[in-house]
Length: 121
Image (cartoon, rainbow, N blue to C red; front, top):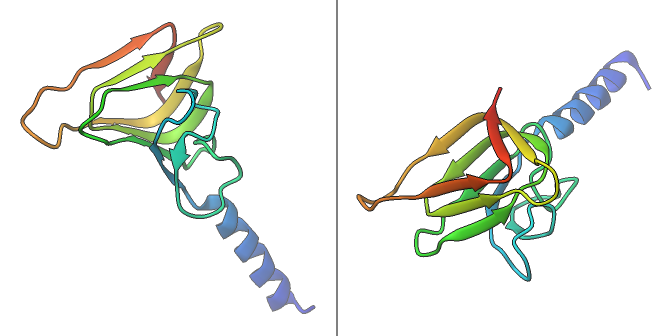
């Protein structure tokens, strides 16, 4: 393989690790962050937001979500509905570059965090 081929392969591998996945919270049997309670497109390394470029979205405007936090560093959390973030066992911390709160209607929105933390970089 020539120099161009090696560069092309390295570029492809680097690009593959940089893609962000957008995850929409969709609780199933439980509310745990680290379980497969998320809808997404593609083939991320985990079935939940865990990579630095990932986005966690809480956007169903007809429900109040409860999400049991886990410790991860991700790009962004977007909240558009009532959400209770709960820490169980220790103090799980989700570190984000952006925490975006946006009510899509004029209705009020309540966000609670108990026993865990959401912090920005």
